[in-house]
Image 1 (cartoon, rainbow, N blue to C red):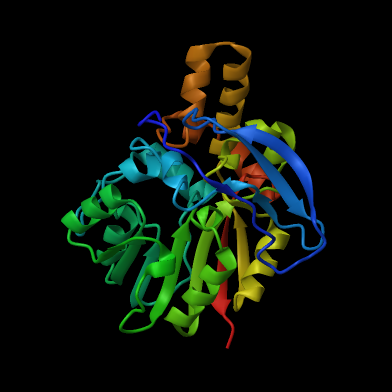
Image 2 (image 1 turned 135 degrees about the horizontal axis):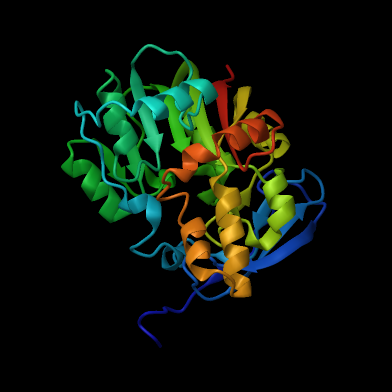
Length: 319
């Protein structure tokens, strides 16, 4: 057996919402992010419309699809109390004009905060600098190690095995994490149990009801098969949250066109056209340059129409 390609195991799982109406196949695709082997199927439950990757790698095998150069795990932590300096005037003006903020939070006083999927701890360090009592959970040993090296309290391992906290959290955040979890409903139930009465959950996920998905299908950057086990729309996300004990209070369509640009890069790459441009577009979400500000007006319009490929949700614990 090739040591670089271990024997992979796959499993078929029913809809976690307990539906028994069967599934319909939406598309088949492959890993375009790292070009690892395999063909994967996206299905949609005929009862609740929740989409998922099925079959999927088992939890023992899925680490193969998170190589060492997986982007979110490489981001360096921002140390508590440090400053990245003021933005240039033109950038600050654009940010105020278009309210560009992928990490929008409810107006809360600092208290206990948990980030699920904290990677190297950049967000946690920023929140600690604002007075929050922060903790994190991170699956990647390397990323968790970097977070701990910056002084953060981070549990390394899956959410499923994380121990109960010694006191409830006022706020739980998970940026682009829920789609990776193998049982998002069980995760939401557990997080509800960990929060205080009236506590908040803030999550962001790709929006599979967006124009981007309908246009690009298997070339959609946010599809990310097979590491994205679930693919949410506003309607299915609301249903899963409610079943998990949360009430969706607000939904924001992020003013972000990164997925759209990267999807265009995948199409160019597949057709062998303008490979240098294709590579730049594909890397856009991880390494955005001046182009991010150039597309602000278009991102604002797409957000207003509810058609960007990323959404952020505020939900409150139901008591």
